[in-house]
Image 1 (cartoon, helix red, strand yellow):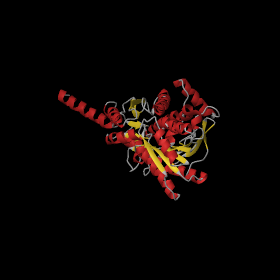
Image 2 (spheres, rainbow, N blue to C red):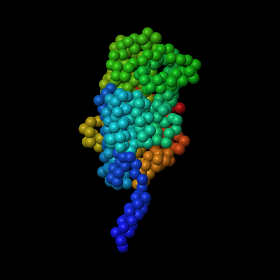
Image 3 (cartoon, rainbow, N blue to C red):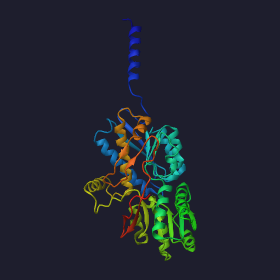
Image 4 (cartoon, helix red, strand yellow):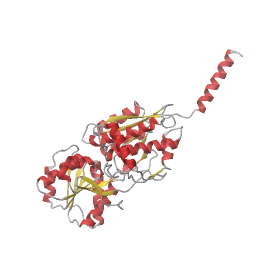
Length: 388
């Protein structure tokens, strides 16, 4: 056989082999899957971002210890945006271009998500389960966008309606963060009140990162509010309630799921006693935990030398949704195949007390409901089932 003939056969063989191999996606190699997240590890909501990151790391570590997903280990690439939309844009570009992230999970904060989401989906990457229950994270329907947290508008409409009906408030008011997060909450509250034939008596805003709420609380008190809805996060929730109690104003307050955390009562102490909040899932208190949850708490303590909170659980469960969907997708992992698999997935309630998540080809929102909780004797207690 001539050298030219041997070369031609070798080239043909190489081409046939290349065609037989599955197409590779960004962030997917023979032995690794890269997952990106844009979080807050140093800014005003770092107390949420750190446990979410740790929860994801724990679940991915467990998957990797078991051999990975179809032989591939999962690597979590984390960028700290500090709850700053401008930094979030740079972080998303780095994760897309440098780290070649296959998917993004649990990006932290509505301002961050609104700024970074277009970069991610335009690059053809999955945008999964962000900590921003904003309608834009799942509507209009997009093949790469999936959300499992009930939308601000929906759950705050239900929670406000329930509170006003049950407790007979006559003068409802709103303290909100002056951005997309606060505006989405406002829409839900306004819709609930309109359905009850009333409206907000007063509303006042604050800038992200604010620490002094004296003027806002004074304004709300002057309006004689008997219910104050809080579109705040943990630190701001504590500051607002502490200011109200300091001036002797014992008004009822209702916070979104962004303020539903053990850190709220740990930081606020007596000042936040009686606070109402919307619960995504129960807080993982060790006291009274079922056997599976108790074992998980011990593993978390051993891994991070600290107590887990509800944000730790959410990070863990989001990572678990990714692992289970990637396993069901199979060895040939692409964003399109992963999304198609997720559209047929149904996740039943687990030992954490998570809701049952379900997605479809026509609906990329996995859950629409929340429950009410209240801080009683220094810990959150669920006081309703899922609200309609």
